[in-house]
Image (cartoon, rainbow over all chains, first blue to last red; front, top):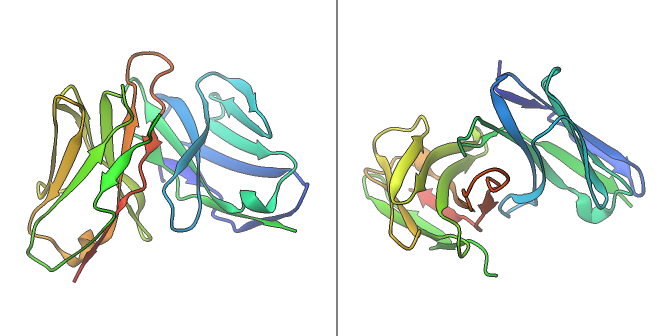
Length: 111
Length: 115
């Protein structure tokens, strides 16, 4: 079992729809959770982080964390073609800053 | 505020050679981590440096090493290059000052090709 698992996709949604990206993790000691966006040929860009159970909203993005279910998700509202990218889920354990990444979900927003 | 910078951006080497990559973190950030990204293995953690000390190390052979200077700039070195070392090498910096400061920001990466 991989430490961090994501639906590999590809995931396609129409413009204006809600894109839902999911991630599960196996280490119950995981404490910090991050979502990165990576455009083809570019480096990962941090778009959301969440440390506590519940929802965290930032603009069109909402991160949801459920530690009991070891599940973290990212919702993108009003999806735009510019949101088309690979989304990487990453976690850290305890106070360490070692990010463990999932394999990423490729999202395509269709105009 | 300037972001994370990495040099060089592209590098071509041959097997058996060694290479040194450089990373300058965001001003005020004290932690620098290095990652390797390949199509097959994805993003994997190499090591983290904080206050010139290696704090964590990933599961890579000893050919991969690094260091951090007093100004927080960091270098990583790969000796005796192998074909499988071809990858995008990413540096990430973090404030590392306590709760809520562990977010890591990536530089543009160095694309290493080993022939």
